[in-house]
Image (cartoon, rainbow, N blue to C red):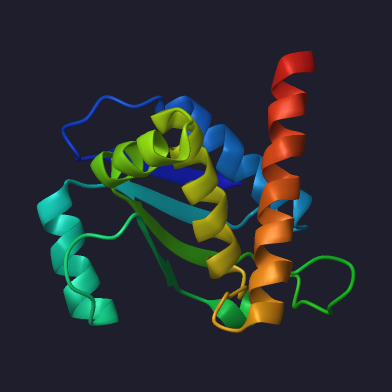
Amino acid sequence: MSIEIANESGVEVDTDAILAVARYALDEMGVNPLAELSILLVDIEYMAELNHRWMGGDGPTDVLAFPMDEGSVDHGPGEAGTGEPALLGDIVLAPEVAAKQAAAAGHSAADELHLLTVHGALHLLGYDHAEPEEEREMFGLQNKLLQAWRASRKTG
């Protein structure tokens, strides 16, 4: 799996861990190993601009996901895929927003960035949380992936 990451946020983060959790989540979801993903970490001002331009939101958000090639994503054994490598898209993270949310939630900024990375990856795979049933499914899967990834890091 080809994952590119660029930290343009001005905040020091563990990009190796972000890459690892993204790779783990996509592998667990049965995404084609030749798929490509881009992760960009940005500052609050740029995230606010993206949020306004693409989502109609005000102010910065924590994560945005921009799918590129939804039709060719291999969702695993349950759904037929084309077998072609997919350009999944881009995940954009705002570490400063993540740090504020982490403090409010009582965990580390790194944990929040890992959660947001998995959240963004699931959005790229077509998951959403607009409806209560979708939210339960997506957040349940997100938590399962994060717990399994954390457990794998402790034993590995």
